[in-house]
Image (spheres, rainbow, N blue to C red):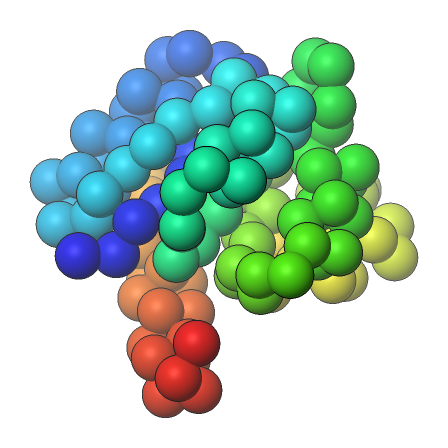
Length: 123
């Protein structure tokens, strides 16, 4: 079972994503912001990180930078309501950049795609 870390400051969205992904067969952990996410990543192994950009304490762009400098290579999906961050060069280092939607099918498809790629690369 793949383990996904959801990093989202809005509690209702965090819970919605967790419920939907759990029902899809994933093991889910949740973090309120980037700082909490990095603490979890240092303690546990994750197959994918799903992360918002605008968050308190440490935003998604700063968190992404710290994740990619860690020893582990964890696929990161930026999942935000703000499409204007797509032009920020730091977001280019994410494995995917999706704009939030009430329909989570695109998100689930991207997660499956990244997990399949990770498995074929032996990561």
